[in-house]
Length: 335
Image (cartoon, rainbow, N blue to C red; front, side):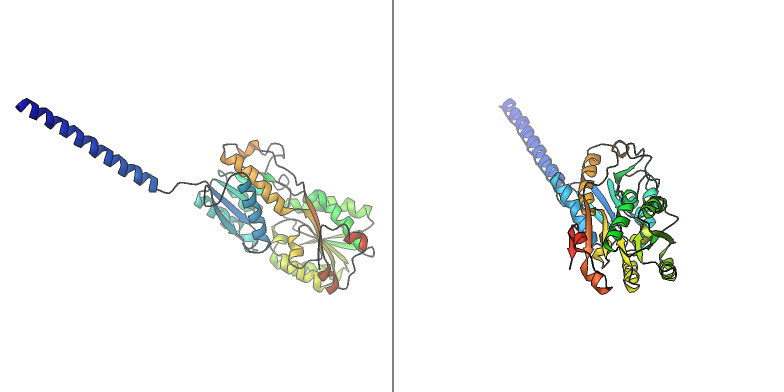
C-alpha cells in the first residue's frame, strides 16, 4: 500500500507542476499581450503651420499612406512638426527628428536642416531642385539617405513669366525675388534670363537673404519701377509668404508665385506643381523604405500634376483685370 501511496504522491506533484507551469505561461502571455506594439514612426516636417494649407498637405500624405495600408494609430505613428514660417527653425527641427529616432522623415523644410540628418532616411518633398541644392547626387541615383520628389521649380520658372505676360500684356519690367545664397534660386534666375529675353521683358533680379531684407527688396522694385513680380522657390520666400503677398498687393505689382500657398494667402496668381499630390506620392517612398528599400536606390521623381491658380479678389483689390482667355486656362479661380 505504501508503494501505491508513493506513486500517487509523484503523480500529484507532476499534476501540480503542470498546472503551475500553465498558470505562469498564461500570466506571461497576458503580460506580453498587454505591452503596446511598436509601430514604425514617421517624422513629418512642413514649413507652415499645422492648420491651413500645411494641414492639407499633411492629410494628403496620410491619404497616400492609408491607400498603402499604413493607418495612423493602427500600424504607424506620425510625428508632425512645423516651422511656423521661420526658416531658421529648420536645423532645430532636424535635431528634434533625430532625437525622436523616427524610422523615416518626410521633409518639406529648409535645405540645411535636411543636410544635418545623416542616418535616418529622408523623403524630401521640394519646391526646388534637389540636385542644385546638393541634397542628392543625381535624380536617377540619389546616392545617400535622401530621395523624394522635385517640383521642377527651375524648369517651370519660364512658364510663369509667360503666363504673367499673357495676363498682363502691358507689363514690361518684372522683378525676380530670390536668395542668392540658395543654389535653387540662382538656377531659376539663369532659366528666367532666357525666357525674359524671348518675351521681350526686362528682368530685374532682387535679392533677399532673410526676412529682414524683404521690405528693402520691395523698396528696390518700386524705385526701379518694376510692374510685375515672380518669386523663386526656397525657404526665405516660402516662410515669408504673408509679408511678400502683402507688399506685392500694397505696391500693386502683378505677381505670379511658384506655389499656390501664396495664392491661398491672398496672392494674385501661381503656377507650379500640385503640392498635395506630391505629398500623397511621397507615401510610396515611405512604404518602400519601411519595407527595406534604401533611399539611395529610389530615384527622385518629378511632378505629374500642375496647377494654375488665379485670385480674382486679389486682382480687383489692385485694379487689375484678368483676360477671359487666361481665366479659362486656370485650374482654380478664387472669387
